Structure formats: structure tokens, C-alpha cells
Length: 160
Image 1 (cartoon, rainbow, N blue to C red):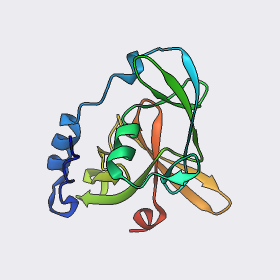
Image 2: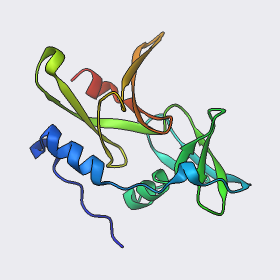
Image 3: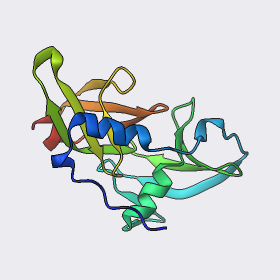
């Protein structure tokens, strides 16, 4: 089944984004506990590019499909999991990158929504908080996506 084209982020309100995000049903990876099967030979680079055996995955639908079965383990490692297998995947920083942001309102009434490199939509909230990590090269903002998985907010988005 082909992947539906993403909605035009610029024309959506944050309420629209919240409705779309709530309607996106993800697989119940937190309930799947198969035996560990090995390494997927996949890696997610800091810029959000997914690689398999050193070559980038160029089909957005493949990246989106794999991202939906991604899970962070209690030890901080990442795996791709289905009901019958679990494979390691290397993640250089965060598994997702927030590439677009929408701001509505001001001050304490402000709301933020993000589109990730996978097309997934996330509204910052108590369930999806932002955090900042200070490093030598400046602040690195992260958005909680789900189940311990985070998105690095792209520098261009952060300074927007």
C-alpha cells in the first residue's frame, strides 16, 4: 500500500496537527517481547538519515515503516521489533529529527508542533516535552516522541 502524501504543514493549525497525530495508530511495540535475533545492520545518522549496510535508505516509505517498529530498550539501546523478532539498530544521537515547527500563541499560551523526518507529527505537551542538553557547541533541543524515543530539533528549526 503506497504511503499517503503528507499534509501541507504550513496550512495546518496546531489543533489539526493534534487530531492527525492522535489518529496515527502505531504498532504496539511495547507489548512485543520476542527473542533477540541479532543486528539489523542498520544505522540512524545524527542528521536522521537511515542506512542499511552502509547505503542510505532513499525511499521515505521504507524509513517510515521501520520507524514505526523502533523501540528504545531500558538500557538505552534501540531495536527494531516485531511480534517474532528483535534486531539491534545503531542510533548516533536521536532516532528522529524535527525538521519543521509551527508556533501558535505567545508566552505561556504558546503551542508548538513539529513534523519529524519520518513525516510523523508531534505537538509539544506534558506527554511530549522538550528538553535541552548543553554541549560545547551550544544547546541541543530534544522532543520526546514516544516510549523514550526522542527527536533532535534541527538547528535551523531551533533558531526559527
